[in-house]
Length: 75
Image 1 (cartoon, rainbow, N blue to C red):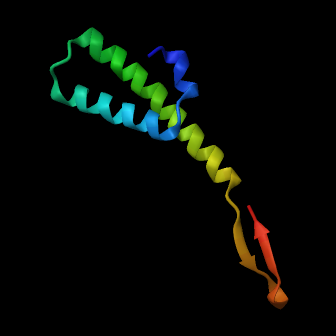
Image 2 (image 1 turned 120 degrees about the vertical axis):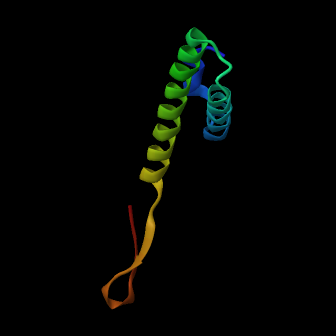
């Protein structure tokens, strides 16, 4: 998959690919050049996942009971 496709991935798919890359790198059976390529891909996947989490967190609101028993919604 091309690096420019990372932005199109869902969080779950990106995280699964990142987990797979980490497992491959941890085996130590990847030559240096391929390890570097996989590391760079993993970095892009991690950044994408963080971006999706940050965006989702910004959308989440919490319900707060304000003074007088009024219910308010706050980001």
